[in-house]
Image (cartoon, rainbow, N blue to C red; front, side, top):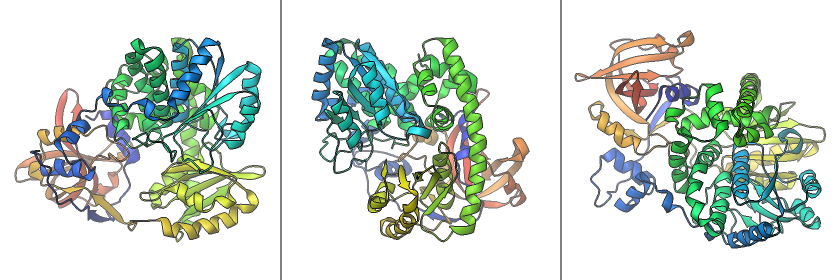
Length: 576
């Protein structure tokens, strides 16, 4: 179900096809699901997700919290529980090393709350993105030593920190790594590593966020140490859903459970920090969707780490006092406004460089005196515009730090693997990664990356193509059909909202709306049937489309709720 805020958000995420792209209809799967009486489109949606039985359909449409996998399927989980039991017995201080993005802050929030509820004294260290980068560092370990920490958890990082874990061991600190990033062949000598990406890991769902991994640890601890209170952990799902969606994890399998129930908890959250964020930022929490998280909540949490320090976001998440929470939310809102201004300016600058020097390259790699906290956002926008993998590097004193964003069918870490000899450090997952490189190695790295990427790009299409999932007749679109589609929500990574091709309909009304006539309001008609439509960011189409025109459209089919009225609406992506 879409709120008006969600429709406004789509303006920022829909691609600017500009009425000149080639359209391509995805191939349907020639198969039937036995025992299921479904609309052909709905049946294809299931088949596209490899859902082929009525039982699998039920599990997808009605994800249940009780269906979460046993956390002890992580082979090191028993070791984690036994070590925490000893920490409780000996009244030890637990250190938590976090990370500076929304997933990292959410992970630290989950684990710190869970351990404190078990009666443990917890010291949380959130690194500075600009000065400390990603991963465990010795400065944090030294501070833990001074605090008296004897057991340290990492969250959303640590799998590649061989030297740092060895240093912690020298300081008599046991290390438990919780992470979800790419696992190299050589691993740290940690007491335990909880990471679904480990080659030896038998946990059945591999696409957990860092926050979800932290939640699985808390789930295991409560199952063994406080089983009577384990159901209360559901109230942590608001944080789990934010971490999962913010880190662009696929909303399938366990993540679908986390997202569905987490969004419900988020809409009635007990967390004072979220409440004050909603208030300060005018976020309607009555009907929060994955889009709300991705484009309103997560950017604000990330803004703290990008613009100042992620500790402000952590303080917001853990705030119990409404005044403290309000002050944190207000500060973060100011940081997010500034972040948007800088991002827009830098995106224009990088875009001009791409047009001048990089249009013929398979991979866009650019370095400059750019703000480190912003380059990941800009890389994502450039990758989305040019449909090419992008790496943008900030020049520091003796090195460059880069953020990468990828495209469909290209695992960006595999590109970095093939060029690892030129990198000091790197890590990430399929669509996003980071790397550190010495200045003298940058040019040869760029050359090698351009060479290696050719073999890795698969299934690429020309940039002029826009894909439609299904062709559907205008007469088929009604409220019942929309309600069937809504059962697939929350939409997100690898569970994208379907795009429909609708042919030979007439434009009955057309007018521009919004600030500077940025958007387009339309009414379509075919064989006496009428449907309203919105085209976000497409106000200029009014110069090319007129009342009476016969057109084809690509659109999402959605429910529109406004002033108490509910109707079917097309959200138009492209028109011809």
